[in-house]
Length: 324
Image (cartoon, rainbow, N blue to C red; front, side, top):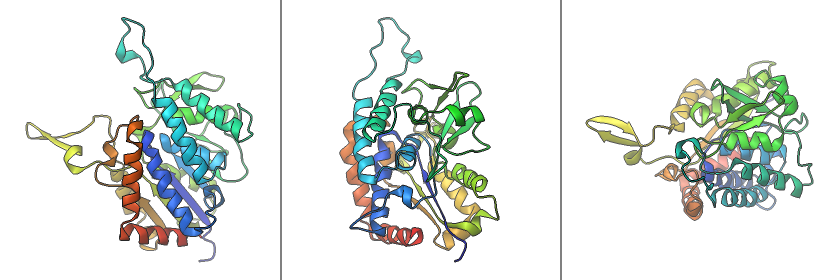
């Protein structure tokens, strides 16, 4: 329909399981052109992410990497960051120290910048091309903020002017207690990931898009919105019974599908018209720990099995047609 020309991409957080979302996105890009799959930045007008999804959003949108480049870089980054735990001084309080060094994430991103011929202190700010934002949480007040590559009322002027690519990526990735938070900007405020506030950032992506394209209802301008998760937990593990009470498998776990269902209910016409797509590998992939690099092959195999299912295959093809 005339006037519908906006494509949005939302990427969940999931640590090493971010690899699954990249494999799904690769299949979507190949459904558009199998011989020469396009870069996501050439098809999506805005990419937003939380946790690992934020870091990947920067790689795909701000750094304009193609899918194969991003998969290779993300595997290397994950292995490098999670391969060695921090050495703690004898007698130190284990609860007060992060398990891994966030500086390794920053160094890995700086290496990627260098390999792509960017300056190591390149700013996230870049108003041309694909728009990118990541979700982060302020340490001081636990307020969710957006670190954006474009002017946004949800990103302070200080952060917009000062946030570097490697800082924004590290802040989005900095899941507590795995990592310390990241200092950004002249005021020295510290930020960590938003896995509790918006691990599934569909709603945040929609809010940003409304601000970027305020002329008329976004529903009337949207061509396609794609949301990709990093794996669902199994029913058995996600709902354990303790003394007759249903207890979550992890007090810090947030079920992204709750946010998905709520969003689809609010925008059901987009789903009805094949303009809203959600992909997420079921059957327990979400139970793999964020730092389990030894499970990378399992993540790949489970995602490939998911993509080979007939219903998923057809949905991927519908998504490709909607984007194109």
